[in-house]
Amino acid sequence: MNKYLIFAIVILFTALNFPQQQKKYFDAPFGGGIGYVPAWYIPNLDPINVELKLIGMPKLSTSGFYSSGGAGFIYIGFIKFLRIGGMGYGGSVSTSQTVDGVNREVVYNLGGGGITIEYTIPIIKDIALSIGAIIGAGTLEIQLYRNSGNFSWQGTWEEFASNENTSFSRTLENSYWMFTPTFNLDFPLNRFILIRLGVGYQLAFNEDWTADNEQELKNVPSDLNANSFFIQSGIFIGFFSF
Image 1 (cartoon, rainbow, N blue to C red):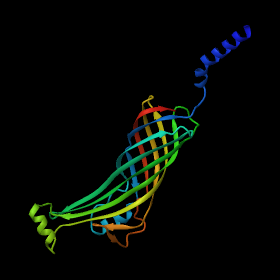
Image 2 (image 1 turned 120 degrees about the horizontal axis):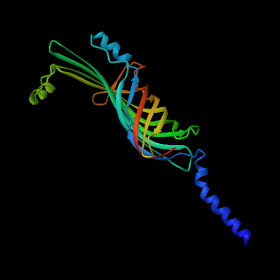
Image 3 (image 1 turned 90 degrees about the horizontal axis):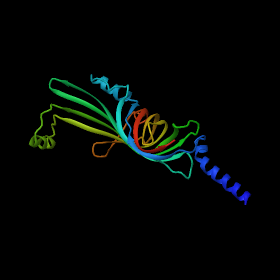
């Protein structure tokens, strides 16, 4: 009888102390959330700026531009430290000039999205230090405009029918696949909110360009592509246990 009583006390003592013992060790993170992920993209704009310089227009800023987007992730559980999710982003930079009543503008747009696969390195407690990649697709678009700024409904159709257009607009587009290595630090403020700091490099794959209504664009400079380094931040809501 006594040995059964001792056995029961040992089991009870172990059960009561097990949660306290768990707190002493790093366990696999779990949870997930969604959030807003602003970023700063720094692509190579030199091929465009060479052309802008030739026609006397101000260059596009080479220091980068702001982009905004959304992202989400969840730890899948059955593979420790692995999380999957998705993200999307878009941003642009432009330059313009008005001379003798004629406005000229060039707009550079970059956007994309895909699935995210990340591994949280189990070396820091309460912070998710994760390496991974974004696998997806995107579009690089360059828009060129020249006009007087005076438009009317009827005048638009008359100009469209005329062979002597005074206005000019063209859209150059490169649709690409991307593989983007990333490195992120996620700091939970509590169990339901976290902030993110991260970096990445977007690698784009596709050299084909089109103009306007999907017409082939030839002789595009080889270094004009969607490859880009970026710095990312973010704020997420959900449930986070790191």
